[in-house]
Image 1 (cartoon, rainbow over the protein chains, first blue to last red):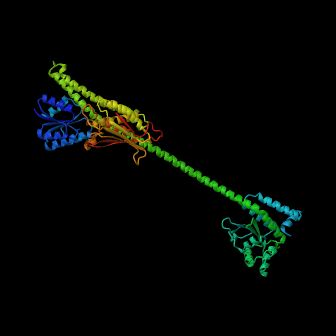
Image 2: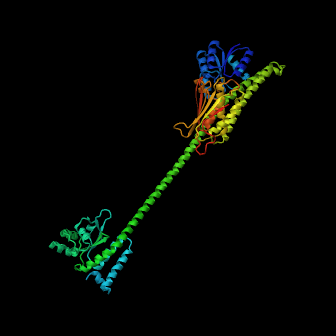
Length: 118
Length: 494
């Protein structure tokens, strides 16, 4: 069992991912803003973060930067619906562990999560 | 015997006949058109016929009134360009006495100090001349006698004759005939002078014409260059509009990517969960997965809406028909749509005030799309004013100061207004403050896009709890035309 944090402004995604990984036996927290996400990283200390780039209050890149600066051991899967190579390069530079381009399904996500938590 | 008389006699003519000869000579002269040629001929004729050593004409210059020695025959080089001022004693004598001036007689007068006679006794007090100076001038001109020629009262030319080769002096007859000849020829000489002047003028005209033609050519060339430059400018503008369109479409495509990929992700997750559930329990009933299918349906609807908006936008941006439109007409035709749209929201009883000058020019645009803009603004305004008592929308149009080719439309509501943070995002694709199901987040994005496609701008100013003003600018239609619809201030209550 691991602690997972999902940061995304899309309620449908938060719901699906939370339900699925809880069924898988993990402890899952969700946040729909960058600010709440950073708060949760600090308090919840997840082992893995699924991080969306486009958030209503700031860029997910800010959360990635915070996370990797303060808690480099936390694995981060960065994902976005935008097709923007620049943002992906930036995420890689800041230490993002995996990159997923939306749309992706739960099976693909599980593979990535399992690989990182092994 | 004078030379003309001798000439006449040689031809066997009487003194009467030689008068006739004079007339013929005059008529012959009148046929010669150029003054230059005529005077040259006179000089030539006299030198030849009278056997004088030298002869020339002192001709009055048009502009200076000085007399220039020209058409010399038998003179040395040093006589070229010789001039006499009009104040010269010789010229004064000729102009006053109006008769030939014979050096031999002047010499006599100079010695005796008496007037040379002639007309002196004709009741008029003889004038005292400086005979020495006259004689000196004649000597300078190598002249034995000088014959004046008048046009009206003006001394125009003086025929200067040197000594006869035979050594004979000029007789009274000679002088008489020469004077008559000079007078007879004066008209011809003047005609010739006028002719020369006309020729010179026509040459000058021709030159001016040529210059005009040349200038015209330059102008035509400049005009052509301006046309080419204008065309290039128009092409650049068209290119800029195209680029702006592409940039807008590019931004749209990026937003659409996001708007489509998110529901697709949810859809995809739902599908994978349904499959996983089935694998865990192949006996599971379909009803157990109904919740998942509902969610799928919702997200498919989201994707459909995005695709519809995009295809609609693209279709319109290609086929949009731009025509001269009256803003008043656009708004009047939009209002019933608003009433229909807002009916269900129970938003009746809102005051809508139009403030438009009667002389507002037409704009060029696509009626349906501009109606879409105003429809969006009306609906947003209604939503912003929901729950308030005195709901008021004011639409004011004007030509903004300093921008005579624009119309600015200020669309003001007294609704809830917006914070600075929200203002920053309201034109962003997909951004909405409305509850789910009420706003797509596309309305204002589309409005701005449509206004920009029309070559205009869209801005917003707002204060929380006070209201919001959207300002649209649209280029004035420059093709002319009369605004459609009535003018002045009108009010409508829904």
